[in-house]
Length: 378
Image (cartoon, rainbow, N blue to C red; front, side, top):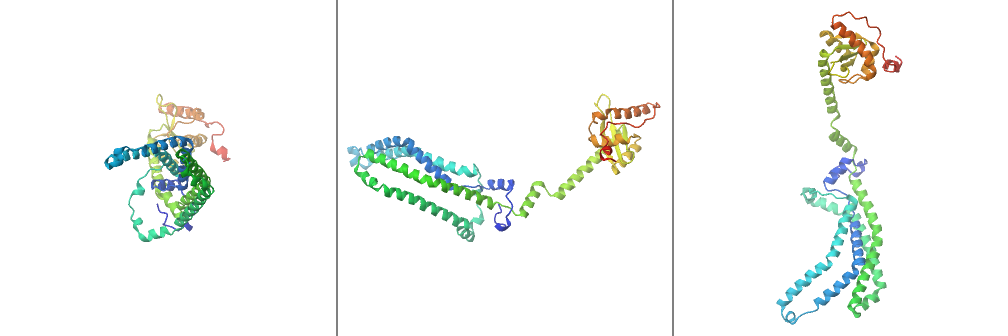
């Protein structure tokens, strides 16, 4: 990404979808660490609330087993080692649910804001990260100072909550060693759960503020300048000049194919000078006559010229020519409401081909509303 190419004052436009997607591919997604901390604490509190009794019973059994030693274990270090190994495995097994709950909370907290985003690009070496001057600048940047201030406020606030609670329950903590083991462990679990609850309450507000700041910072860093927006549009949509040239070439090719189809037409209906539409009909192969060429002005003149060169019959029917040009698509069948008018033209042409002398065509009438000149009042 190119966050540092332009000063922030020039980045006034919101990031495009492509820029946001490119940032995700580079591993740049908003993350709020305080949400992870909050969910980790919340998971731990739930564990102590639901599984506190289970943990208490297992801790008592663990302590009883750890303090029960045989004569060989007391007087032989080699006999003590298997016992220590067994106790270590048992301790890990005992606290593994708590570690798992904490880990799940941390992972879910990472996914809340930016979602799942797996990429190896952040692990790729970048020489810019080895620049000591840039590193010092990052250390004393506004972002780093803001993170330090946020962390300091959170630590002070949470430490104050814990100290205040411990101070008000100091007599209970002092009396714990003098009580029985079961009562002391139960009191310790209760104290831990209460402290976690007191920590979670302010952590909710800290996490909300941290999430908002993280999203705002991520969004601000990806803002774009006018030049970047234009460059991206060119990369995404292509150079406008090149696209216009391609469209021009496509029109030329379509016009060339259209002109090549005129010699196979049955008739050309003209305006007589401004419009020309070439029609073709093959009985048994086509459901209706098709438009093989159409045009106005210079294109119409070219159609008439090719038709004359190949002795294609041309019929003057101004209203029909205009209606066909306006409502019939190139290389498509004519509209159904023009069937009757076109049938009169084709019948006349077929009689001429057969050497007959058909009656002269009068004015070809078409349904009302199809002549564009009627709609424009011309």
